[in-house]
Structures are given as C-alpha cells and as structure tokens.
Image (cartoon, rainbow, N blue to C red):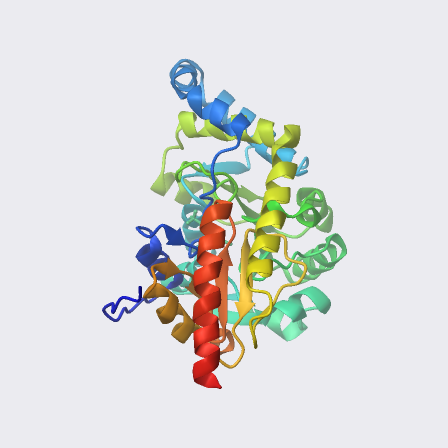
Amino acid sequence: MNRILPKVSAENLTQFETLALASPMNLADGHARQHLTAAQGKIVSELPDLWAEAVLRPVDEIEREAAESFFGMLGQHGHPFAAGRTLSCYSSSVAMEILARSLVTTTDAVALIHPTFDNIPDILRGVGLRLVPVEEDRAHDEDLPAELLEEVGCVFITTPNNPTGRVMSEDRLRRLAGQCAEHGVVLALDTSFRGFDPAAQFDHYAVLDASGCRWVVIEDTGKLWPTLELKIGWLVRSAEVDLPIEKIHSDILLGTSPLVLLLVKRFADDGADGGLAELQRTIADHRALVRAALDGVPDVSFVDEHARVSVERLHVGSRLGMDVWSAVRSRSLYVLPCQKFHWARPQEGERMLRLALSRDPSTLLASARVLRSALLDTAELQG
Ligand SMILES: Cc1ncc(COP(=O)(O)O)c(C=O)c1O
C-alpha cells in the first residue's frame, strides 16, 4: 500500500540513510546488515571470553594483533604498525576528521576525487579547506596537471570508490604517488571498501613507500561485517608525513576498545581463512539477484558493470532519482539518491540511485520487487 508521507529535507547522504534505519526494507546505507555466517556467529557467541581476554591483556598487544590480522587479510603486508605509524580510531570518519584537521595546518586546498561519498568533502570543507574536483576518469587514466598539483597540498582518492566501485590499479597508484612526490603533495587514500575487491588488495604500502611521497591511508573494518557498528578506522601515515596527525589524534581520543579490536582480529582471521572470499561470493550473488529482479524494466541500467563493492548504482533513465526515491519510500523501501555523491556538480547524479547489497537475500528480493513496480509505474507516467 502506498502511504502519503511528509516531505523530507536531507542535507547529506547520512541524513537520507538515517530516514531508512527503522524500515525493514533499507537499501540506503552501505553498512553491513546481512546475517552473520556460521563462523562469525561462533565468534559472537564467544564474546564473554573475548571480554575477559580484553580485560586481562595489554591493549597495545591486542591492537598490534588486530592490525596484523586485518592488514594481512587484505594483502597490506607493508603496513607500518611496527613503526608506530598506524593509529586506531572509533571509525573511518573520525580518522578523516583527524586528517582534515592536520592538513589545514599546512595547506588551504585539496584535490578530491569526484564523485565520492559526501562525508569526505563535508569533513574537508568543515575545517575550511577548499576543494578542487578531480574527475574519477581523469584520476585513473591520465597524469594530474602540474598546475593542479601546484595549487593543492593534498590529493585525496577513494579506492575502491563509493559509489562507483572503481579501483585504482597498482601502476596508476605508482604513477600518481610519483607525481605527488615530485610536487611535495600529500597523497591520501580512503580504502574503506577494499575488502570486497581483490583488485584493491595489492600491497599499497609497498608502492607508496617506494614512491617517496608523503602519504596517509584511511582503512576501515566497518563496511565488511555485520558487527553492529563495532568497527575500527585505521589512520596510517608515511614516516616523513610532516602533519600533526599524532597530536590531533590524541586531542580526540586515548584509544579504541580492546574488545572491538579483539573482535576485529577474530573476524579478520576468519576472513583470511576463507571468510573474505565467501563474503565476495555473497556480494556477487546479491548483485546478480538484484540485476535479475530488475531485468527487462524499460529505460534503466546498471552503471558499474564490473563493480565488486557492496553497493550498486542504478541509472533510472529519463526518470528523476528523487521521484523514484519518493515512490518507493511511500512503500517503505529506502534507497539512496546519488546527487550528493557528485559533491561539485550534484545534477550529474540526479538520474541515479545507489542500492546497498550487504543485506539478506530475502530483504533484497522484496526490495527489488518494490523498486521494479515503482520503476514500471514511473515508466508509464513518463510514457
Ligand atoms: C568511502 C567511505 N569512507 C568513509 C565512510 C565513513 O564511514 P563511518 O561512517 O563508518 O565512519 C564511508 C561511509 O559510508 C565511506 O563510504
């Protein structure tokens, strides 16, 4: 049944995601909401033991083990935890805030990939930084112009990107890091979605260190596993980064929970033991399920053919994404309109929706049926 709902005003993607939190058909946020696997369920059933372990053991030892397991699972063997350059944060957004506050002490401008998740530009702008958009195709296919690198103090790339899923290749990262080294610019990466795509799991730290550039990487445990927002954002930096990251981290937090770190270690060990490959297969199955359920709807297409991340963009043709968003919302389904990913030119996203795939198959199927019917209705209206 269609319900008449009050008009909403959402100023950013997270506010759109918040509207969806109470709905059983929530394909809005990219957080993991699928059921635990059997192996993950067993870890959760051992939480009282993990608690006791967290109370007894030194936190620096637990933190090291969590980092070794998580970075190891993702092929990031060159990570510098042992050198004291890996800080844990409550979330990747907290890591981002620390990076932004550090950057603004040395520069007034950042070149940022376009489109990307809007809390990245919002946090950077929030500390007063000016942003220069770098089109995703350009970042992946061509050298950045020297004039741009003269103008900014940092180049910021999300890889795999949210919402496109596009991954920066090893060769391209090497070249970009070389350019940043040449111009004395910090290269910052957000790799929150790398667990979903093996193409993003070459050792980035080896490439960055070999380039000689100043670099910062934000890693995230939060997008992979349904751990009820128990997550760690890691803030990793090069030896000579010349930013007050450690000081600003200590302005904001003493440290993360050893219980959460132990949980991350156990989930990452399971991931390395086949759980990550299983997750990648699950997301591929969910992508196929959604694509099949929308097959044959006129004037729609999936934008990112080869994406492996846990979100999927749908182009809704001549319809407006917000019209489809409103139509499905009246049937209790929530998706994400894409304008705000296009933080420099929102109109470029106005005919796209983003669907989350980290859900149970039954939720995805029910949601895809509602979406299909709304798209068919709006096709009739257009026609
Ligand atoms: C690429 C990227 N980085 C960072 C974040 C922020 O994650 P959190 O809300 O866990 O801090 C998000 C959120 O979706 C994201 O997509």
